[in-house]
Image 1 (cartoon, rainbow, N blue to C red):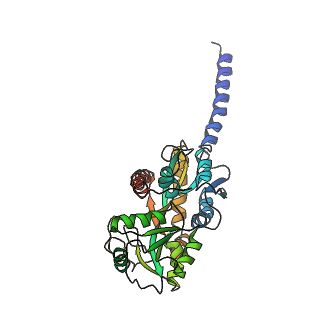
Image 2 (cartoon, rainbow, N blue to C red; image 1 turned 90 degrees about the vertical axis):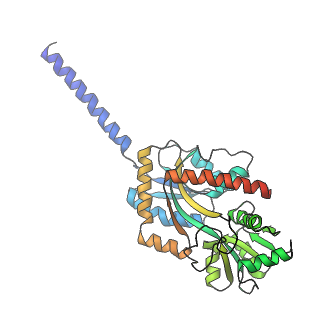
Image 3 (cartoon, rainbow, N blue to C red; image 1 turned 30 degrees about the vertical axis):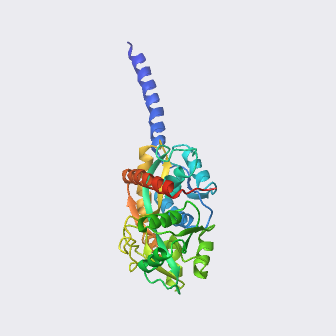
Length: 327
């Protein structure tokens, strides 16, 4: 082989490598454009609020805009499905909850996605215990007082929730089964209507998330008798858990987590996780979360999958026993 031919081949090889290296570097340059954070609820609710608190902090770490996109409808199915079928490139995230991941699969005949196979969990963010709430002027001072009346007069007491198949509804049915009482469910279209009904005395009591109940409790319009989580809510430290109040096995807590489509590159998942961790560590974020009553719930991807699997099985049994349906 002549020296001139060797020089030509060397030059060609150098040219090929020069072309390949930038392409590889470009593939790893995540993120290089704006990201979207899908919220499967209308603007203004708790999950939307959390998304708008976190998105600018995530954007600051990733050095790319993070656009919150509300995709409500179908009981969270529309927005959740949009993420399940988005390109698995790290640029589409879902602010999801157990409504979509551990409840909907047991209420819908067929979902257009698989809650375990269609998504990769990035992290759990927050937990929102449900609260057993009564009007401030109610005669019940404790959960035991309430249950004593329920046992004495079966079928007389009714409880409110913010909708069929919600964590509030499951909380009521869990309490009903664990305490062995006959109480009637009255569903409302959202938390606002439910709380009005509770304060007006249309129902004996109700279940709602701590974030929704907290302003009413602080304002003296409602009394919190118990929370439905395993641990006391940070925002209501003097309110016992249902187990502490004498009713074990009541564990229905709403939660919020961050997910991406399955198949999203591991490197992108890692960067998103780091950006979210930095956002959650921000002092202003921590203050705003504390102000509206949620508890930080830091779980990694593996723990989130375990939680979804366990909770889905538990909720499936509860939904079947209580014959819960959605129209």
